[in-house]
Image (cartoon, one colour):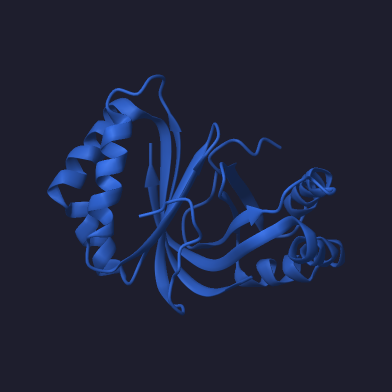
Length: 107
Length: 107
C-alpha cells in the first residue's frame, strides 16, 4: 500500500486516530516494525486508510469504520508489543487522539 | 508560536481539523501566506493548537474548542482569500476532515 497518498475514505461518519510523536535518537528496530505494523493494520477489519508525514514532529492519521475496529487494533497482540516498545524505546513523546470524523471535503 | 510541538490540548471533547495535502511545484507566495495564516488562526476564539509535518504528503491538524470556532475561522475574510489561492495555486490535491476528539492519551 502507498502511505504517501490522501486516504480514500468513505462518506462520514467514520473515525480517525491522530498519532503525533517525537522520536528518540537512532532506529532501534523502529523502521522494520513501522512497516510491519502498517501492513498488519491495513489487514484489520474496519481499516479505511492511513496518512503519514514526519519532519521533526511526526503525524500519522489512521482511519477506521468504527470505535470497535480501533479497540480491536489497539488490543492486537503484535500491536501491543509494538506499543510497548514504542513507549520504552522509540518515542520521546507522543499523543494519541481518537476522533469521530463528522464532515469532509476537498479537491 | 512553535508549530513543531505536540499541541497542549485540554481534556476531550474538543475538535480537530485534519488538513491533508499535496502541494503544486514552486512557492508562489505560499510560505509567506502559511506563516500569516498560522499567526491569524492562533488569535481566533476557540483555537487550541496546531501540529504540522510535510514530506511529500503534508498533514496539518488544528485543534478547536467547538464547531462554531471552526466555522468562524473558515469564514474569516483573510482566510477565505488564502483558501481560494490554495485551491487555485498551491494545492494539487487536499482533503479537509472535521472531527470531534472523543478521547486522548500519551506520554
